[in-house]
Amino acid sequence: MPTLTILDLGGVLFNINFARTRRALQELTGYNGRNLAFGVETQSDVFVDYDRGALSTAEFRARLRTMYGYTCTDAEIDRAWCSILDDGLFPFASDIVRSIRLRHAPRPNDRLVIFSNISELHYLDAKDRCKPVFSLVDEVYLSYILGLRKPDPQSFLTICETEGIQPSNTLLIDDSVANCTSASSLGISTILVSDPSSLL
Image (tube, rainbow, N blue to C red):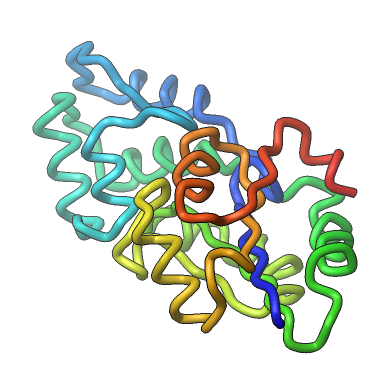
C-alpha cells in the first residue's frame, strides 16, 4: 500500500526568521505601535488570512495600513514582509529531501510532497530559490492556492484525498507543535522537527 509523506518547507528546508519580519514591519513609516503577532505557532488573523488566500496581495497591504498605520509604499511593505526569507534554503535542504525519500517514500507508488503555509508575496520571493527542493518532490501544495492552511485539519484531509492516500498511511514532518497535533488527531503519523539537520 502506498504511503504519503508531507514535508513542511519553512523551518524544515528553508531558514525563516519571524523576528526579522516583526522588526522590519515595526520600522516602517507610520507604524502605530500596535502589537504584531507573527510567529511559528501564533499569528494575527491578517497574516493567517493572507496565507490561506482569503486576502489578495492588494487587500493584505490595505489591511496592514489600516491596522498598523503604515504610510510607506507598497514596495516597502513587501520588502519588510519578505525579510523573513532572507536566509534562503538551508545548505543541506536537498540532502534532507533525498534522505526522507529513501527512508519514508522509497517505493515507486509512495508519494513525497511539500505543504507550506505561504502567502503569494512570500512564494514569489522564494520560488526560484526553492527550485532545488521542489524538483525532488512529487507535488508542492501552497496554502494560499489551496485555500487552506495548517493546522486546519481539513488542509491535511484535502491533501490526503487529492493524493488518494489515507491519513493512516500518511506522515507529516513539520516544525510546528500545532500542526503535528492537528495531524495526529486525524491518524497521521508525525515527526516534530526542532533541528532540521537531524533529518539527514
